[in-house]
Length: 209
Image 1 (cartoon, helix red, strand yellow):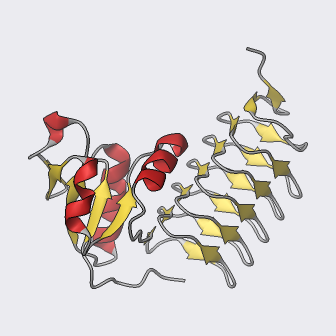
Image 2 (cartoon, one colour; image 1 turned 180 degrees about the horizontal axis):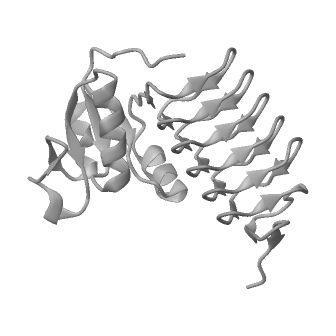
């Protein structure tokens, strides 16, 4: 699967590092970027990879002819913005990403460079599959999930709403991970995660607060 070049210009909500990576993906796909919107007023009028920060996020109502992508890494903030602004959201899929057959990718989702998504996987809305992440066959990722750089999900893994899979972590096949969980960097998940919380270590265990 390759990203289709849209005739509509894109607006990226957010203007920091993650948003710049999305802009780069869109550029490499031949898409046009109208600009960025960010609530940090100090950024308004500045440029990110050649496109201006045009105003605050609430100004999105002035650009209804555009497609939008939320360029913010936090799952919770992406969800808050998406619920507050029911816009027409596009996708951003890097040309180097490998997408298998019968893969479903929801709106607002970003697939970054070198990532692999194997066959019959279902990825929800406003997800992030980050650089060189690997998502194997028959996975189910719910909305607002972030799979960090270098993370590996085995086959038939289910990941709940707003869950964060940390950098370089590994999830064994046939695992179910509850909503709103955080899998720490480098953790190895070998058992189902049945409640929200932060899970770290090898094997991953819930961190006591």
